[in-house]
Length: 302
Image (cartoon, rainbow, N blue to C red; front, side):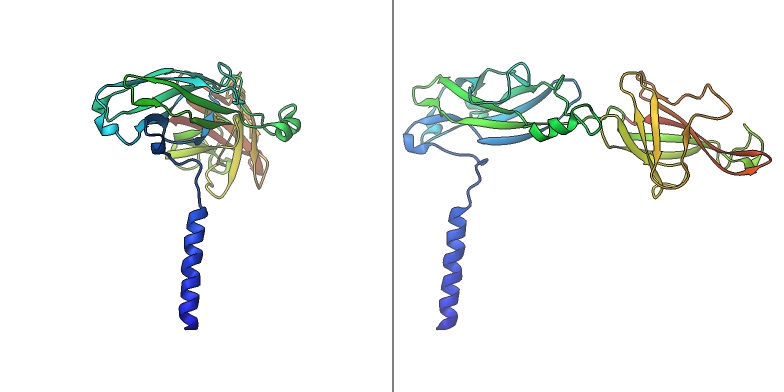
């Protein structure tokens, strides 16, 4: 009897918990109005938008819901407008691409509202940027709120009066992060005299070599020929495309350039996306030469 009591208590608890779980971003129906309504599929959304400087198109699904959708005969046209409660600003954070949309009976009254998210001028500040700490303390992601403001084509189809809110989370975009083919030449004084002191293959080839974004200007990659356990970061100025810094996480500190060839300037080529990276470090001297030198050419895999 006691076991049966506990079983009944457990079942009642499960039923109670299930009745309390509500997801405010799921779809909804307004069948109790007796009308068919044009409505967004969701009530809320979170957008993650890389701040590339370009617009990014996002879409929100729309449908007709109601007790007699199957009896509708005509296409339904509806309009979309910004809700005044939004913190996102039209033409600053977004613009509505399709302010008027037609839901076709032949498409089962399913459609999409398209919005362009504007990223120019909206890149998040990063650690090290002027004012970063104050910005981080006060920043709130802008929220876009859209309404379906009218619906025409059938007397028994109306706009729902419900909104969709979308938080626009701008994230840093690193223009040179990605996958490359790497050709590397490693010069070591124990293997001859510069520039013929090449250690190993000429060049060493690594396919599908990844540069992982750390910020909008910085990526992580292997150091020398000892990855993936030996890593460093490289920083490229997005205005000049010059490599301005390399930081090895552990071990001897490297320097940019080739100590014997001042023309080897590390840079990114904006035309073909290649990265030319030259660096060196000092070790035990052989015949008076202490330098270990690395020439890297990274070709992007588009």
